[in-house]
Structures are given as structure tokens and as C-alpha cells.
Image 1 (cartoon, rainbow, N blue to C red):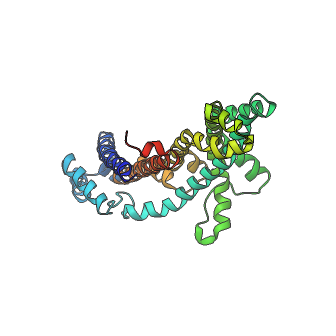
Image 2 (cartoon, rainbow, N blue to C red):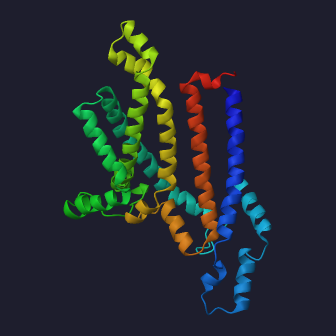
Image 3 (tube, one colour):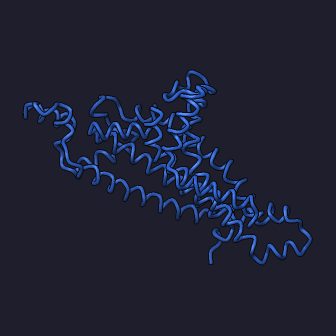
Length: 315
């Protein structure tokens, strides 16, 4: 198990190194000068040059890359060009919105998808199976921002059960915070639950057709015992893959939902920073999100090894 984990850690480090280079190069080639953008089109050249000197934009790209990565390794994300605030403070404030939102949406997605996928697989060909697959097909086809606008229209404008947007802050209490995140979390969870339910059904059907399942039934185990002791565990490997990918998507890909509900999260911060040409914020936030994705994938790999002992053995 230790050797397996060390190999995955090495892969994690290489992935982060490559990602840092790709992120830096991709953002550096974006046209436009942050100093000129901040000062306006009528700014004097010497003023623009002085601001570039202050922001460190006059250094060569390799020097800026080394300075940026060195700061990241020390926990220093730099200072925002626009707000003149440490980027680490901005990220920490926004992370306490995006991370609970992603976890909330992932929990809702899992709670919906697991029972739906199990029912559809164990009742293959029945009306339950057809109904669940039809609903999940609709959930995949309809984009999450449409769900978001529909729920704002129904639950915020017509029924007035929830606010149409904004976040009161966790200092207002746990229940007000969760209530503000409920509609965005449901908007994110429904399409993901549809995907996860279909994967769960497919993996479970493949497992139920295996020879060891028939052997277990021949030994006298009931269908429920076989499902609980043997089928579910063996069907979890592809499901764990989807859960890991979904968490990464929910954390890094909620830009549209955060803008629909005016949530002060990381997605909205990236959107605002791109609009303001605040490159250091964009680079740092995207690198943090890549780090989260890689760490989640590492955790999923370890979960594979826990679920399937064959992955821990050396052949």
C-alpha cells in the first residue's frame, strides 16, 4: 500500500509542475497589459512604466514564473493588482463559500444517485428502471444554469421561500448559510446525480452478471445479501471515479452558478479577475483549483486500493 501511495504522490507532483507551466504560459499569452488596463487608455507612458515596475511586470517571463512558483511554495500567492490585497486572503474568504457549496452539492448528488442507480439495476426492465433512466436522461440534457434560473423563478420569486441570491456569511449562522446555498447546490447536484445514477446502474448490472454472484446465490445467500456483501463493493470502482471527477467539477466549474446566485465564491472571483486583467489572482486561483483536482484524484486512487486489494499487490 505504501509503495502504491508513493507512486501516486510522484505522479501528483509531476502533474502539478506541468500544470503550473501550462497555466502560466496560457495566461501570459493573453493579450492586454494589466497596467494599461488599470490606468486607462489616456495614461501617460511613464506612469504605465512606473506601475509595471511596481507590479513586477517588467521582468522576463521566466523570472516572473520562478517568482510566482516560489511564492506558492511558501504560501505567498502575491498581491492583487486591482484590489491591492493579498491574494491568499481573497482566496480564503471565497473558499469558505465554494468549498461548502461543492460538498453540499456532492452530498445531494450522491444521496440521489445511489438509491436511484441501485433501484434501476435491481429492477432492470421494469417501470422503475425506465422511469429513472428517463429522468436521468433529462437531467443530463438540461444545463445546470437552466435549473438554477428555474428554481430562482419558482422558489425565490413566486413562492418566496428563498432569496434570489447573495450569501449572508457563516457568521450569520449555519442554517442561514445552508439555506442560501441550497438552491445553488441543487442546481449543481441534479445533472451530476443523473450521470452518477447511470454509472451506478451500469456498473452494478455488469457486476450482477458475474460468475461469483451466481456462486454466492447458489450458496444460499439472498439477493439483498449478495447485493450488499459482494455486488456493491465491486461496482464502486467506476462510481468512485465519477465522484472524484464530480467534486473537482463542482469546486472548479461553478462559475456560472455562482454568478447566477451572486455568490462570492472562487468561480466569481476568477470571472471578475479575468475581466479586470488581474493576472496574479487568476493564476493563483486556477493553480489552487488544479491542486484540489489532483489531490482529489489522489484520494480516489487510494480509495481504489481500499476497495480493490488487487491494486495493492505486485504482480
